[in-house]
Amino acid sequence: MPLEEGFFAGRALAVSQVKTEYFVWMDDDFWLDTDANIPYMANFLDETGFDLVFGSIGKAQIKWESFNKLVLEPAEDGFCFSRVELPNRIPVKGFEDQCHVVQIARNFFMGRTLTAGSVRHDPVFGQRGHREYFLDGVGKLRAAWCSPPQTKHDHACVKGKDDFVDEYKAKRAGGGSDKEKKEFNVQIHAYWWYRSYAQCMSEP
Image (cartoon, rainbow, N blue to C red; front, side):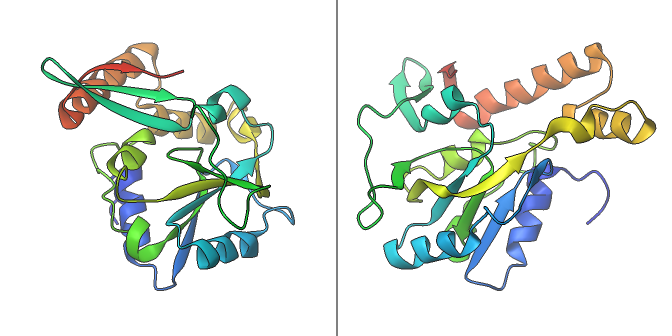
């Protein structure tokens, strides 16, 4: 696809070309080793009929990971969105000791191509997008998080000082300077409120 068409547009194109029953997705600063256990994820989807299964991430932000339920409640002129902790963990039958139901987690997951691949990746979210896909999947996709599959997360690749790192940061963050980043955030947040018909939001 053409250069700089965006993250979600690229993900949508990639998933649309998948010919296998399942696909695996992870961020560009994740990496896999023998702990990834991809066969476990495929077996989980085979046995349960779920649409998404998330794996664990080395050095994960535990507080972030625990807020795995999405709530949309009517407000006066739209909806209020919250990301909260599930009040009670719901284990998955047959995988009770290792897997539980979630609605959102971090970007290491296996999806069922026919169902998870059918939820739209809004191409407006070019540099940054996460909750939007899972929010659009509420009521359409069944998802779970399992502890055995594990990926590693390493930001070291973007901590250096060279032209490649500067270009990467600029494209991912929506601009290199603080002013450009601020303008980018204002634009993307304004669109998020509009597309989600939301007037308030709360997340950790």
